[in-house]
Length: 112
Image 1 (cartoon, one colour):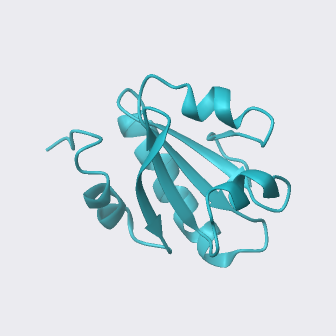
Image 2: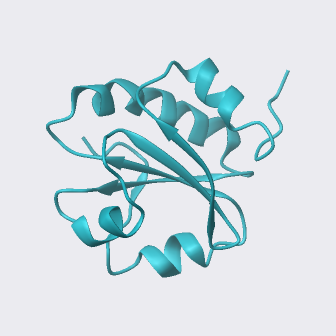
């Protein structure tokens, strides 16, 4: 279940996410997580529509436990938005695409 979203790891998280010049939404997920699979198509669609404004990447917490622990991810899916190397917003739980877009207000300009 990789889709078109880029996967980040403990090893490249700082460079790919914290070093980005635009906001980055990190989807903390796991293969066994049903709600994670539910929101994946919404995240793919948002990435396709708003990729010029925000980058969306996935981090598998089973394969990359250090980063999940570093940011206190206790339940998944957790979506953290990073801006300027800091967590600017945390979204926990599966939500429909429209709700995720509302949560991203301030990071993206939603197209009418």
